[in-house]
Amino acid sequence: MRTIEWRDGVVTLIDQRLLPHKEVWREYEDYQGVARAITEMQIRGAPAIGAAAAYGVALAALRSPAETSESLLSDLEEAFRVLAATRPTAVNLFWALERMRRVANEAAGQGPEVMRAALVAEAQAIADEDVQVNRRMADFGQELIADGMNLLTHCNAGALATVDIGTSLGVIRAAHEAGKRIHVYVDETRPFLQGARLTAWELMRWGVPLTLITDNMAGHFISRGQVDLILVGADRIAANGDTANKIGTYTLGVLAHENGVPFYVVAPTSTIDLSIASGAAIPIEERNPREVTHVYDVPIAPESVPAANPAFDVTPYRYITGFVTEHGIVYPPYGPGLERVKRRARGAWQSAGG
Ligand code: MRU
Image 1 (cartoon, rainbow, N blue to C red):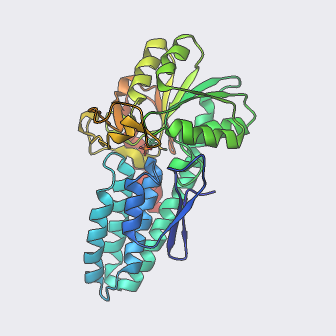
Image 2: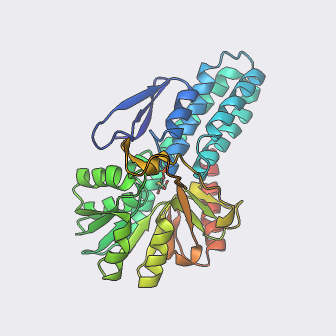
Image 3: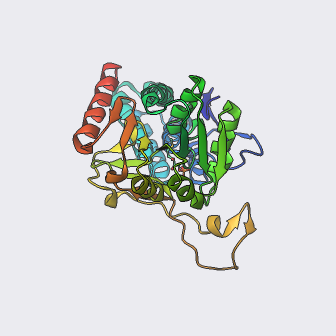
């Protein structure tokens, strides 16, 4: 099952706000709908957001009445602007939009119909590559997981956060499918509950043994030696290895360091942003405080209480044991290592005709 698909000029995605209780698929025929779906977190997770944005641009191209390349390019500018404004932290969004922009510009000389076809093909390629890349990370990650291990994960970095398979959860699923007897502690991930709602749902479907915990229980289990390995995803990795991921990841990084537990980030090279020197420059999305004061629309705090809701935090590179990417595992020093895998990814893309 793919989280997002292109079917005859329509984008179909599973509404993740309603999981695990309801499986509702939504269809979008214009980029504005896709942009709303990203902002409202019907679709979420860095690689899935990137694929959705690419499909959004393809829809914008198909729906535009433009009869010349110039007017199509100018219609697309508005789509790029709207899609780029959906969520600020996951760099995969901007990476995918950049790829789409390049294809639009390159095809412009051949007229609007060629541009449209090229943009649909590029969005499909971005989605298909995501699945392949996740499969490769799942393979590379196997050397980290031994039979009998207890793992811990945060948020949802599974099939739902990507086009399919997932990043850190893809590694976990592959270990289970290889016959390793593993058990996973799943952080519930307040306030949006991606762990409780989505990761628990995915692991149960695959038959992976798990225990759901609240985020503030992680230290308890880690300090008692009940966690052998922590695997998380990422939304943006700065050139020095500082990593933005779901709020609460930093706490886990510190706990891992304090207790000598390996802490790996599993992320495709599209999540590495070499233009940003350190985590201090990563934009952190601030979401509606209602997600904190309410659970499923039920108020859990005094009315009108001030509440903060940063959706991500930054884990400093020194707490990260390694990065599992589709071009291998990167260990410190991260500067040259991250550059190396980024270079390899560019090479692979160019030799595939990109
Ligand atoms: O706010 P979300 O649900 O989009 O945040 C998702 C995460 O933080 C994931 O860990 C990250 O995007 C990696 S997904 C493979």
